[in-house]
Image (cartoon, rainbow, N blue to C red; front, side, top):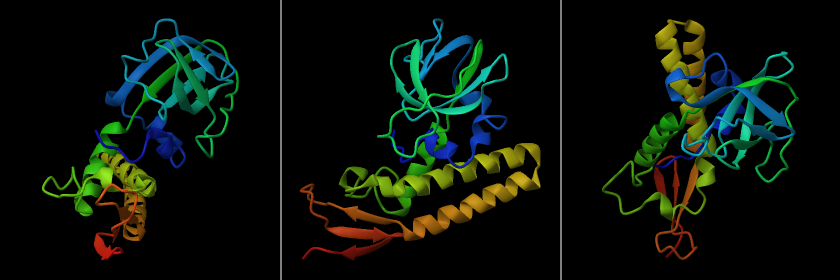
Length: 218
């Protein structure tokens, strides 16, 4: 399952998609009565491992006293019952930052992984790569740096989700959001430069820019 972006990437742009606009059918785990000690979220009744919770995911936390109410980054899955969580970091290498403390915490972990997978299929098809283009001799393993696709994928996912909600709620505002992010997606995709290593030797052979191919090695 190929994905170029994760849920934290979406959180940086649209926290509401993990709040009132989360997708109820894509909730991986939820519970009540969890505890938060610094950056450690614990729920003795949870099974985060079998629920397929991953680092790079997002958890929405709400305390009974109202001191805590928001979405936070999942830094790591430490056990079936414990997660390390953080205020969204600028870089994954940064130390985790503890959310505000609260008591009697309810949590919900929802995901947009299916939409990210579909965005990856669309992108690889556009650039003539497997798996989107099954007949291609070039796959994502030949891309020297897939991180250049992160923002493109993120915009695609957000546009899809707002379009979904716009259709469900018949909301012009949500539809405008979808159109806005689709435009950002199109612009980002046009500027995207994929450096391809055909020989898997670390040396670039071609560059694909918005679907165009340019040879860089004789």
